[in-house]
Image (cartoon, rainbow, N blue to C red; front, side, top):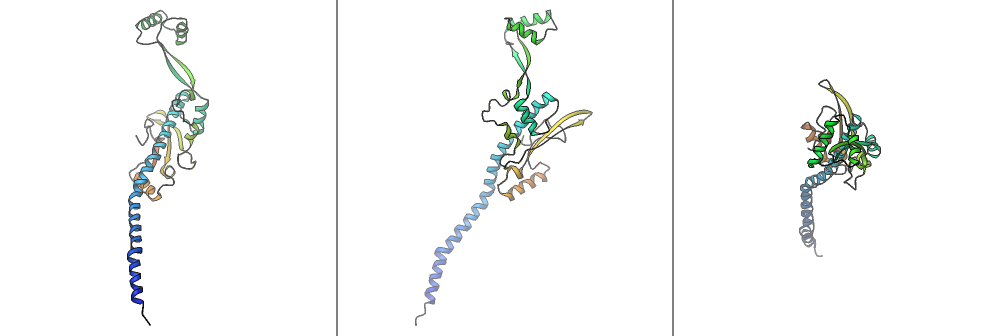
Length: 237
């Protein structure tokens, strides 16, 4: 009876050499590429998400500054900001006439000299009657007709949420602190990376958080500060 063991061994070696080994090599190459590309892809999507988050925080800051201009303090909740946008009004200074019109400038100076207590409203009445004048007048306009009206896709309700987080709210606080004997309104709005970068490589996100906290920086995006005045700066600026 013939012994086929050497032949079987040869077949096994051929299968190992020409089938299994190439598959193993391909898998190792793929794993190596994946390990190299993981940080690259993470940073790519991180930058994209940060851009959306930064714009949202800038919009919150714009509304907060307008809110403070009307109330003297910052809004404590995002719902208050949304309501302010939908129903509030802000003072706008309107320029009537042209400062380059020498006749209007001279005529305005003459009228003010004759009546130093004349009000912008009275001057506006004169302007409507045909007087050639140049002056400024304050008026109140709806917030939603003034802010972001050059952004047709602006949705105020989206300001309440951290993008890409699945509906998690922006973390916002406001306070009034005494600084050098002066009461100063402060606010901050935050988007932690653990929510903004939700769904991305978790270990790389943890590493990012550690590198930020290890150097005394907030692990995410943040605008303003309730600890001390910083001119409402964003930590990306």
